[in-house]
Image (cartoon, rainbow, N blue to C red; front, side, top):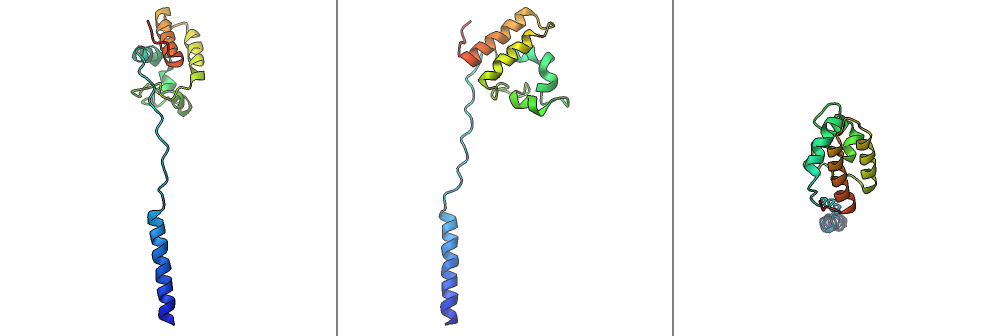
Amino acid sequence: MPSRLLRHLLLQAIGFACAACSAPAAIAPAPEPAPPPNPWAESTRQVLLPHCGRCHNGTLETSLPQARAVYDLSEAVWYARVAPHQYERMLQRVRGVEAIPEADRLVVERFVLCARDNNCTD
């Protein structure tokens, strides 16, 4: 009788082990697709660095996690996490900084038109 109980327990243990091995693995969500290349991304980064880099540059101690969550100018594709509704706020801020020359504001506007509206013509 004890061997029958032992055999039953052993078969149950094997069954649980096999079930664990054959259970489907958790599927990781697909990574967010990278945004399409933007011909004004690098020149816009250069405009934003001196004015926005204090908070939006992950290489600086002054950077803020909330700011970097929107965009981090130290990343290769720094605009990858910018949501469409956040581009208007970017334009408002750039337009509100008197130290940014008009030509640089136009670069940022071209960047936003390309990123937000998919209007990437000159």
